[in-house]
Image 1 (cartoon, rainbow, N blue to C red):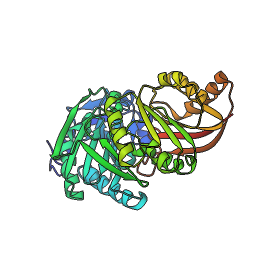
Image 2 (cartoon, helix red, strand yellow):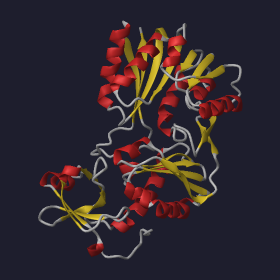
Image 3 (cartoon, rainbow, N blue to C red):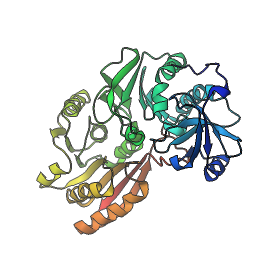
Image 4 (cartoon, one colour):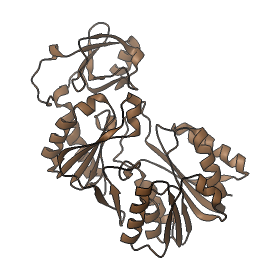
Length: 390
């Protein structure tokens, strides 16, 4: 495993020649290119070793990773005037400083978010003194141990865990693998402190991939929306929405999760936050559980994980049926699983099918610990809307 200070010369690296169109985009700031932009590869691809990116005249465009199986296939992380061996250490320190500046409680946050933090193919979540890495490219997985050493140096962390089961791995054709401990002794469960609530989450297992920090601004909206309301949470996970709704003053909460491990943690989080008299959680998958509900709620919470509009539509329709007239429907959609521009047309179709009309009250995106590179094809990470349903 190479360290970031390995003294090999640039002449030892492979060279990738890019198309004129891709080269022009990179000169104007783009940090990625598609597989069809790769005209020639000189040398041997080795995951974790940067490639020199060149145009057809041999001019250096920067340094990055090339993986023809991934989407996008070419991702630049260092510009021509930057040393690629120090680019990731510099980016990691900059990411930490961003969180210190922009996040209310930086001990609990997304500490690295892909190319928005200059580390394409890598996310890192922080749970106080424990860190969970999620590599989604072969290059970043090959650098995992070196990055773990950086984390130890920069943060004096107690542990670093690598999870390899994230949805973004499929874009690179990577398999789901079991978690690997890179340093220390990570706890199975960690407690997150956020907006006055305490949530225990599973660092090793679970389909939520840990605690969804990406929904922080959605949770902040619940502090205004939930007081005095009867709330339905159709996909509650470990309670990352309903705990905050109940703490904000919701009158009653009914919640469902289809995962048995999440169900156990959700019930633990109900008890830990003193909510036993106001929250009930059951096992069940959305939207199937909605078909058995014969009442309407003041506020319905939908943490959507559908990968396309066709799958999202039945969930939206069922959720609208569960929302009382002039009640509120909160829908959070992850990207790039569902492109941002598809959300409102899908909501409009659900309204038409159900004979309802909706007023858009609130629109939220990801919090500041999820920075996004403007030119990236990865797109925004989250769109959440609050609708008043008529």
